[in-house]
Amino acid sequence: MKPLTKIQKSARNQECTLNIAGVCNYDTDTTVLCHIGFGDNNTIGSGKRIRPGERNAVYGCSACHDFIGSGNDYYYIARALVRTAEARDELGI
Image (tube, rainbow, N blue to C red):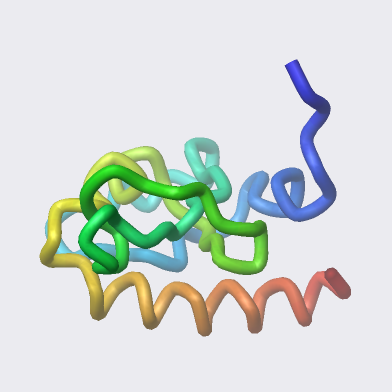
């Protein structure tokens, strides 16, 4: 198993930036780095994915991580990309 990168480690104990209404568990103990990829039909977060670089990733709780890719998550993904970039700036990453 490959060691975690600095950006992957930065997700530990962070608030979920996806924060999907009715889905989020708000449990920072479950937060991981969620890669946001383009599906096989060039839609964000759906279909067969091509794993993107770590700059195209957000902090997400386990519940939101499992939810992304449903096809109804574009707003949350866009918002989370901005929130995560701001959080990384505060962490100096």
